[in-house]
Amino acid sequence: MTAPAAADTPAPSSAPEPPSGGFSTDWLSLREPLDLEARPVALVQRLASRLPTGRPLTIVDLGCGTGSNLRALAPTLDARQTWHVIDNDPVLLSDLAHRIRPWAENQGLVQRWENADETVLSLDDEAERFRYRIVLEVQDLAETVSSLNFSGHDLVTSAALMDLVSREWVKTLVDHVVGAGALTYFALTYNGEMRWTPVDPMDDEILALFNRHQRGDKGFGPAMGPDAPQVMADLFTAAGYSVTTEPSDWDAAPDARGFQRTMARGIAAAAAELAPSEKQPRVRQWLDRRLQAIEDGHSRLRVGHGDLLAHP
Image (cartoon, rainbow, N blue to C red; front, side, top):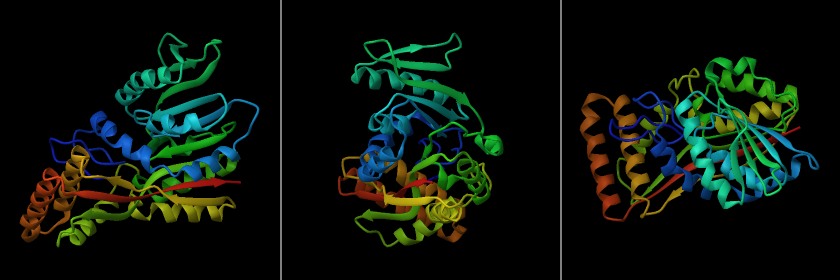
């Protein structure tokens, strides 16, 4: 799910590039606990059961950001793993390397660079064997999707990306995945559903404007936005893959004030871009009421997402 944020806030969600021209590491930190809580355990277990056993796995993570998808999935897969993590922002990839260290130490692993230019990171066990190898790759996926080669990859994955891309982009991706016979796991794709508590009379109107905004061009052509979960399922099914989906909704409790404030401001900014001039004051009033409820500790936000597993 996406939304450009107000100028002084990070962009919500799996978003397109905010006005600053890139994703905020602060925003990615803010949302990671909700992402992790939302993961459907049974579907992740099903993914693990479908992957090869008895040998190391090779995985590619598209639009990896600061590595939250890796940190969520890697411990659930019972094998040594090489992750090719791809993002167009070298700042996020650099931050990924910093964030991996405490995560690795919590598992009793030692982090070291395998090469002088610090693009291959190894997390080793006590026997100095790698448990995870992480290859950092700067790529603009909007430009390189047609040349992606998944031959020899066991899993192609992403989190909070697929609602940003166009149908044509994901069709190209599906063709490459199916051609390689790889499994796919796409996590946290926005489905257009959102529910605030307490209810505000403007909620439905704001959501309609926001979902229209989600279908704008996020750098990959006209975005699928809320249509993404169904479009992906249809494309993989048409290609002969088996598809399983599970909900992975964000549930932001009243104490998640920072997260809710950022969401409310970003949603209002997106709605304001499309609202006619006579409705601009109503958008601002909606935001004021939302922020007050958040500060008062009365607000809860549920945002609909889905995870998709597709395999031959």
